Length: 231
Image: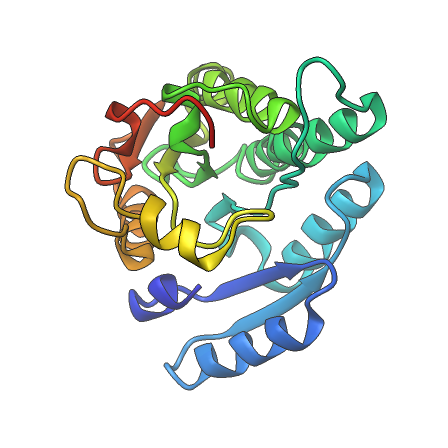
């Protein structure tokens, strides 16, 4: 949100449970001279996703020019013992919600001028290019989303562009300890932690470049080229 605001974009910030943090972020964004809107909703539920989108469009109209699918469910499990309900919940949030927002964005902009190219940007994970068996259901959902970048770009063209970024480890992950994070954060080709601001800048770049679609940018210090047996 900050990266978009600094680039002059108005921002709608979705949240599920983090109401205080979302409104605090919006207040900070407004100090940068942009408009900011906090919208609540559960991404697992289709009706709730529709409400999130409709609420945003009611205020922004066709000025809604980019949707960034950043939220995800991230639950540890294994292929030998995954819980089907939890796996489906992750697929709904991590895959189906981005597909829904793409469909609705394409309908919103169906009558736009041909030179206007709004976009959907998915936040993936370097793990989809560097497989290991941990977080089995999460990984399945992100693998499907990675494949959907090209498929959705083809399906929604020429109205909508579809791109993605694939970051590496940036924050404490699941049950990870701070000590483990400190060691893992430099397990990449550049031997240094990934700067989240670089990931955000890449998303803003994709949002603003009307000639890029069907593309994933790997913003991970080369982590996807350093195989690990487990997360």
